[in-house]
Length: 272
Image (cartoon, rainbow, N blue to C red; front, side, top):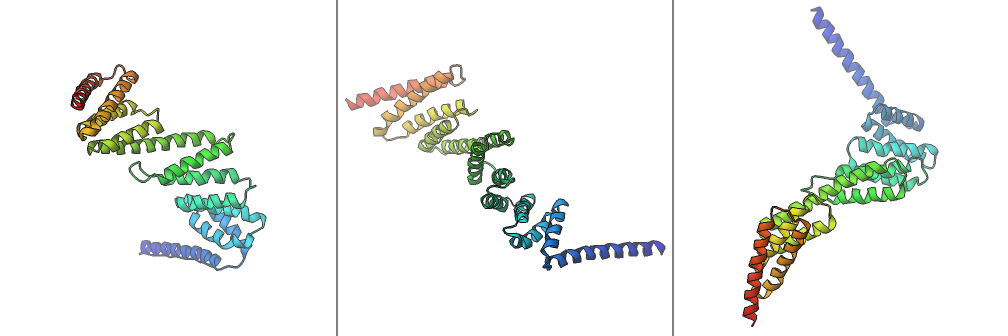
């Protein structure tokens, strides 16, 4: 019996405290005391109660417009979105902060956090990479604007990480064109990859698939188009062998060159 009584008292106290805390926050939301609201917003922020801090900052930021308190309040307000993983809104508010307070001591950090928020929106390489490119461009602008910032090294590292993601997307798309026998699109995509990512770890395979794509494209072309495509096959085969002289693909490429030359002779004889 005593155990049940103690348990009931404990539950009652727990509910009472919970209700009291809720009542305090609800009272704050309806308060017109801006100084109290700002004080409590900062307290909630320091306690990492981001949602509560965000709500209270929303209530007071307008009231402090033009006053020193507005700057830090808005900066914290942007961070409350970031800490709740609302990265799209965080990027928006960090950017807005930097524009509103261009001379702020927090300007550099806000600029960085805008781009870092976009970085957090960057999805798997299989998906649309709009935010990836946006973050890359943003970090590059940050590096150019703040070349001595301690964040430059991290920004460069993140750019490299995101460029690798873009590279993988381009490579997989080009490979898909090849697998679907869309050889014209495959050659263009593989060539664009080497242009955009000249140091790609996929470079050898990409150059090999360019040759294969041109050869298969030539084989499946109408007669009038074959000469140009067989010539490109030979051109890119020789380019591959110059760049990768000890490649495991050497024998196959030499075979492709021989086949292409034979076809070119046939085409030349038909022309005469």
